[in-house]
Length: 269
Image 1 (cartoon, one colour):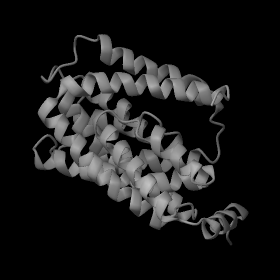
Image 2 (cartoon, one colour):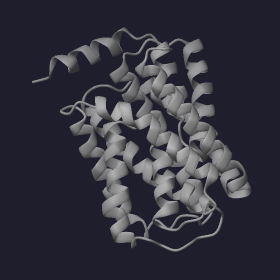
Image 3 (cartoon, helix red, strand yellow):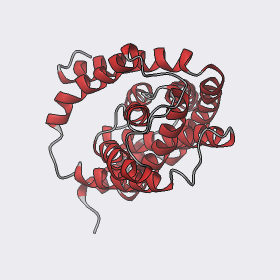
């Protein structure tokens, strides 16, 4: 039997009217978000409020956002793989663990109060921004590897995947930080691998949102097209500009996410 929330989602989707103006606006928002996301993460700061402005309730906005985010992370990942920054065979176990973590997180978020995480998260993301801003270890060169690929998969990949399914903001930054500090990757390489793992977690979350009837497919596909364009352009800059563009954008987006999350807690906007 369908739950009451499933029926509510279906009614909401039936009542939602996708006009040409809304579609064009959200396409543009998704394109900008895809560009930012492929470099530093945090594109959801643009797309989720835009979806809610268009009239979608939070759960449906999150589900539809995951659909369009899958497009951005897929095309960015494809570009990075083609350019040789990512060896899929080498990160296969991490992809599986990230997927499993996100699936578990999506289940847990329905059972556990996320209030504590909401209080701590802005400061964690701000700390990531400060690390990228002040750390002398961040460069284009690979450094000493702290964890083996297997250990990384069952700790960082699984843990960040769990977080993405459970909450989500800043997932790309958490993955990038893990690759820099634990896998010893240079910044461009870490960003590329972060996007590939983020695609895996997006797919896992999308599956569960779809099962719950919380995805507007037509709107999500329109935004997916915008994400694809933005992500392709952004991923090209990662390859050509590297640290020069990634580092300041990660710091900027970390600060923006922290401010946004704190403001939401205190209902400032």
